[in-house]
Length: 225
Image (tube, rainbow, N blue to C red; front, top):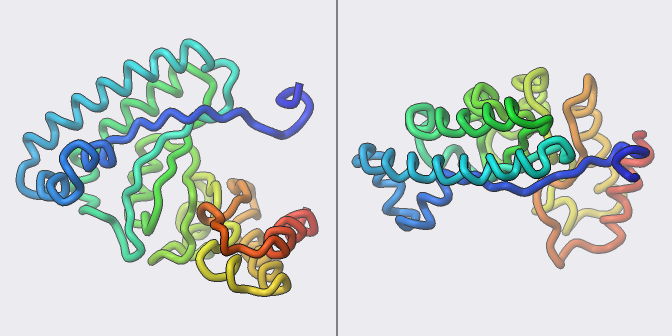
């Protein structure tokens, strides 16, 4: 009933991680070296992972593909300062396999594709768009080249920003309610015009965020509406 009578959406968390699962299986430092100097074996691992994920996707699309609105992928590709590895390597090894998965979703369901990828991913965004992702999250606006104005200018016509509404590192935990409101209002005014924006914070809120700042954040959202 909520789905039919409100603007709320149903999301299924899928994962489909390639780079991250590589780091889990090989250890972070080893897999980064694999990507740089042992790409043949890195590709063997990534191919095994994508085939595993495609098998899961087949089941997800068959079970809920006509009911769920958004399917969430995950693969953290950025640090605070930039990509964790070369965009050239991403294009060669990971992008084609992510596209296999997003193509499968779009061909076999009505779901939109959502990628959770932390950090500075501005350099990856043209390829993530080509890889078939409809929305990006969490939009860490304090990372390098991830300012709201830059993201909206460069990619606002091509992908939805699901996040970036409030900085969870400094503004929410340390600002005053008035500062939070002003910050949130400015971010909405940047991201929202023309659509392609789903408001939420730039990452998870931790225990150091004062409750009054959470209230101020949502009051700013309501006032903007």
